[in-house]
Length: 380
Image 1 (cartoon, rainbow, N blue to C red):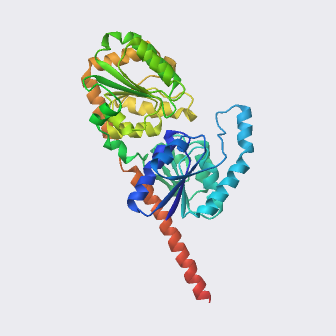
Image 2 (cartoon, one colour):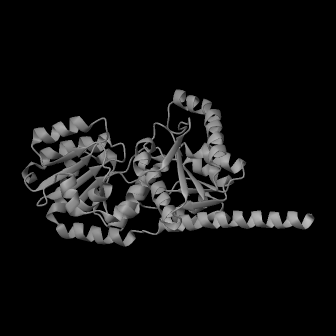
Image 3 (cartoon, rainbow, N blue to C red):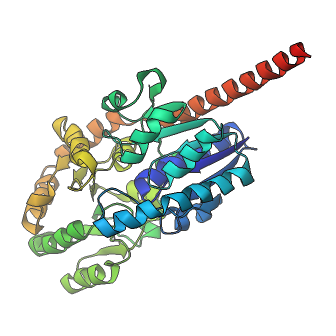
C-alpha cells in the first residue's frame, strides 16, 4: 500500500498529517507513506526527522499575499502541476490525502485527474481556498468541526475531528523538566505562537515581565519564539532575571505540554486539538489575519464554555497579559476547572476515523478493479 500525504507549510497542517501517517503505520506496518510539500515549509525540517520520505514541488500561496507574490504564485501553478505529475508517476500511489496548505492543491488535483482515489482533511471551521476547491472534485472530505460540513458536498463529507499525534499524550513532566532545564518547584508557563512563533505574543510576554516582577521567584517560562526573535527574547529574560528556557522551536512538544501549568498560544485548530486532548489551561490569542477569522471563532468556543481564557490581539499588551496571569495564579481553582473542561472536549480517535475513511476508499478501488476484471473475462 502506497500513500501520498500532500500539504503542510505550517504545523496546523503538518502535525495532523504526521498523526495520520503514524496511524497508517499502526494499521499496516508495511504501508509506504510519502509526504509532498515545499522546500520552504516546516515539513522540509520536520518530516526527515520523523523518518518519512518527502518530495518537493514548486508551489506558493495565493491568499493573503501582495499582488506581486500572488502573480508569482499564479505563474508557478503549471510548474507545481508538472512536479506533482512526475511524483505521482514515480510513486504510483494507491491513494492521495491532502491536508491543506498550498502544496496540497496541485498534488490532489493531479491525482484526481490521473484516477487515483483522493481524500482531503479540513482542520478549521472555515475551509481554506485549496480545500474549498478540492472538495468539489475529491472522493471523500473529512472535517474537524460540524460547522464545516455545509462548505462541502454532503454526500461525501464526514465529521472526524482533528487528528493529533499519539505521542502528544505520552509526554513526561519529569522529562520535560530535564529536557528544557526547568525548575520542578516553579509554576511553568509555556508560550508558543505557532510553529514559526508570533512577534506580537513575544512582545507582550516581554512587556509582561515588568509587571510580573514580584512573582519572578515563583514562576518560570518555556518560550518558543520562532527562529527570528529567539536571541532578542533570550536577552529580555536575561536582563529581567527571569527563570526559564527560550527556544526557537519545540521538537519535544509532548514534554512541553506535560511540563506546562499554563499555556499562552494562538488558537489554530491543531493547537486546540492538542490542548484539549492534554487537558491544558490556556490563554488564547487568536491570530487576527487568519482566513475568515477562524482562529477567533475557534478560541471563542473554548472561552464560552470555560475551557480557556482569551485576549484578542488588539487588546494584547504586557499589562493585560500580566493581569490575566496574576488572576489565574491567585485562583488555582480556576486553572483546575479550565483543565477539567478542556479535557472533556479532547478527542484522541480522529486519526483512526480519517484512516478508516482512507481504507474504505482503498476497498472501493479494489472492488472496482475486481468488477472490471470480471466483466472483461465475461466479455472474452
